[in-house]
Image 1 (cartoon, rainbow over the protein chains, first blue to last red):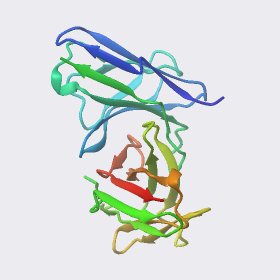
Image 2: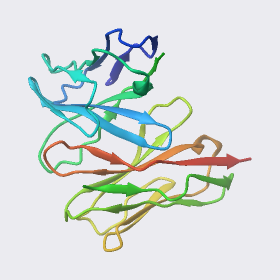
Image 3: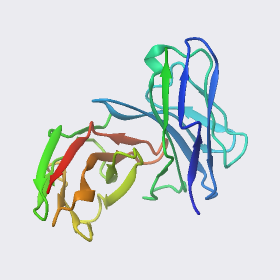
Length: 115
Length: 115
């Protein structure tokens, strides 16, 4: 089954404790992205990757890191989480062709709470 | 920068009736893509319908159709014969051309379907 998986689905942690949210897709997609969803704000892009070893900042990158060592994986790293990073996080992937309208497939979401 | 506005935070509709969700956007680009995503209580992001800006014909997917007015930068979603399973948050999204392939989301409209 074609899918984007995220782990963990739920995480409660404390301020300053480094954490990683994993994202994996099995569709051989080139493009992957991370969004955060906050009430009343919709979804905002954190980071994206056009291909292996190619990553760039989205609209709200502060406090986050990413890496793309393999095509299928795109982990989101919070080196020192703070309460304002409490949010619902989505990973998404798609084929990446210029001027394409390929659908972005979303993972199931990760609910993160930082106390 | 592109922006997407959904002016209706909440809407309700009777089962079997028709409802229209509004979306406007601001952009200086001439070619782009527009999407409606559905987010049920499970939080999964589900693509409902997409529209290519260069196409004048409005997209249709079963009970879902759009009214795309490019000059007015308007992209409304019409749901016909509403069903209880249509109850969800609906997000309008704009996809930038090239570069980040970022989806710019509106803040969402919560749709309630009354039996």
